[in-house]
Image 1 (cartoon, helix red, strand yellow):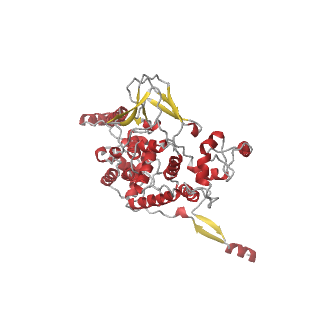
Image 2: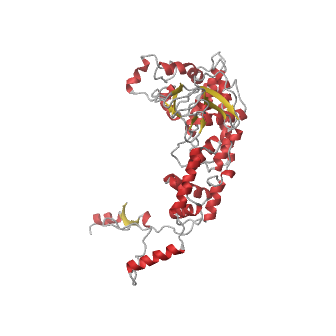
Image 3: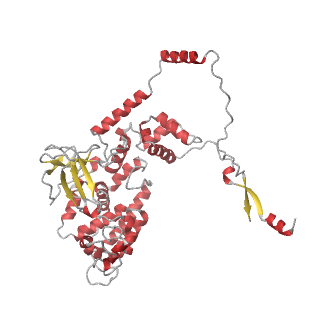
Length: 477
């Protein structure tokens, strides 16, 4: 062997690859959060499993995690603890009784619609006259428009509209020539409508940072707002970003109507909503991303957000209690992040009589159509959740996000159908049926029966060998 070959040999080492090592197969006791997450994953993978009993659900968990040491009793107790057991509705935390609302001031209603306060449904919209199927009942623009938080960086760089957040094409780069650019910062607007809606508030919120010694008293602290905006983007905290813009809009509104209208909406404190989120393992809150914090951590997060919020409004502070109410109010009333004055009065059923259609351009608002003929005196309804979801998922989403358990006709019918399917899918096997089946089998296969071969020993857990790979690889040094 030449010296060159010897050097080459020294540079090559045979090692074992990671996945060829035997994996631990011993029993593992999972954390309660792991068990709940496993059940939720099963439900999301196949919504039909939500109606299964505990025994079958436990079997699916064990099939997914064969090395877990977890009993059927523990699975049941954890689902009950986190409000995920469909039979424990009486024990699930709801907060509908905590939600309050007032008569809405200075509201212009459609011709065929009126607001009615009832003891059972609270404030709602009712038909004054008959409404035909397919009829446009009303259309409205947002009372409070909230740009998409995810587009903040694009808005700051001038590649998305400063107001609506819509991405601008290269051909729209001529906005500067059309007078749609800001004269102070890099931001631009996509059209005259957005500039008109946003220009004044844009300057108040974002520009006094460039002229800190201005004699004009500060209604808002721009440096604090830009800091809060970046913080909300980093934490993906849309509600804090939204209520900051809402409060700024309220303070800027000289008529005072917007503030009164927002306070008249269905109101609840965010800490009350969090109790329902916590009791559901944090898995189905669409605004939280499923994040679950212990209560002390969540309280610290709220207080940090409150401090940043206060710095934006040095002349008009609010107390912490009102801050929490603003956040809760926004969360239960917004649609696609925006807040609409009339639409926010629509109550929920899973099979509604109206269809709410948001427009392609979010600043254009929404249109409400009749999904069927509606009689005079009948309540106008919408759905807060996807009606095609299982009744269990709908109930969880409604309880966490809006504080109530739905008892509409669709929910009752869906539960009845599930019960019927359960009853028909597993008919009890009587002794007579078993004897009949055995006799038929005997007649078909004869006295000798069927010979079953002993299966090969399992090689589960090993990677199948191929002509290309063995259990070793060459590491070149």
